[in-house]
Image 1 (cartoon, rainbow, N blue to C red):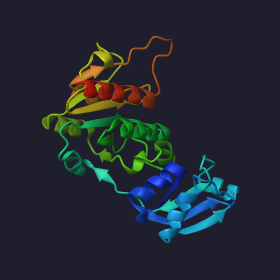
Image 2: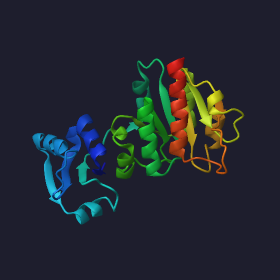
Image 3: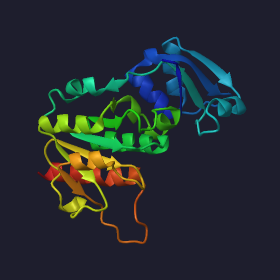
Image 4: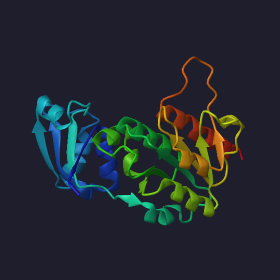
Length: 246
C-alpha cells in the first residue's frame, strides 16, 4: 500500500502516541513555534524523525488547501482491519458497543463518526468495503486522533457481518425514518450495534431487514433529517446514558 499524508495537531499526536514507527517525514510551517506544536516536534526529533521547514503554500499544496494547523506528515499506512479481525476486537468485551455505517461516503462524515465512536467508548466502527469513504487525511483530521485508536473494520458483505454479530448475542439496531418508535423509547443496553444509513438514502434494504429493531430520532422542525455524524452522536450517547444507568 502507498504511503499516506496526515495533517493537523491531533492526527499527528495520535500517530505519535499509537505507532510512531509509521512516520517517514514531517513538514512544519516555517516560523511556527507555539506551545501546542513544540512538544510534538521535540518528541519527533527524539525519535530521529526528519522534520522539514516549509512555507504555507507548500503545506497548503500538500493537503489541497485543507486546514493543516502548520503540520503535515508522510506516514506508512496504519493497520487495515477486515471481518477476520472482528473476533479479536470483540474478545473479552462483555458489553460491546459497535457503530455500523452503511453508505457514508463523505470523509468528513466518516471522520466525525469515528470521533463520536471514540468519545462514546465504541469498540469498533464497521463499514462496507464498497460503499464507504476512505480513511484519508481529511477523515483522520476531522476524527481528531480517533482514527488511530478506534478500529475501522471494512467488511465484504455487511448483512452477513450483522448476522454474524447477532449469532454472538449482539443486538442490532438500525435507524430509519419509518421506525415506529424513537431512540429514547428503545432499549440500547447490553451488547449492541447501532447502524446508521447514508444521508438521504438511509440504510440499504438488506441492511434494514437484518436489523433486530428500527429506531428514529424525533424531529420537531421543518428539516427532514440530520447530518449523519450528528445523528450518530445522538444515538451513541443515548446508548451511553442508558448503559450508565442500567
